Length: 133
Image (cartoon, rainbow, N blue to C red; front, side):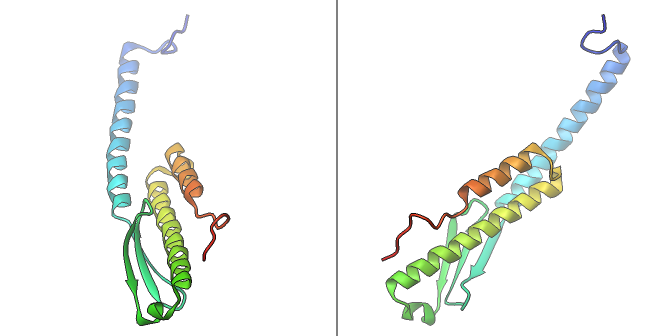
């Protein structure tokens, strides 16, 4: 009967468990670093004609909006639409940056990276259903 350890000696089992523990500790340390790097992501993006600038974090939270005199010349609906479109693009860019950080640390095929990419895709702005007035 080979059992769970496949006929390994107690010494071999200890070595294997020690390696796996070390790998788990390294991955946990890397995860803490990745989390800090992702939390530090700030994406600044300006509208195509530079009427406004937005800053978002990796979660897509809008942190700042800067308006120029040109932005104030737009009508309310146009300014609102431009703000939403610019913020959406910044949010997408911040999410992609966060995914690159995770992929660099864990590899593109890592399940955590795949999960992050699927969350970014799910949160991607959908133009349908929004009506500007």
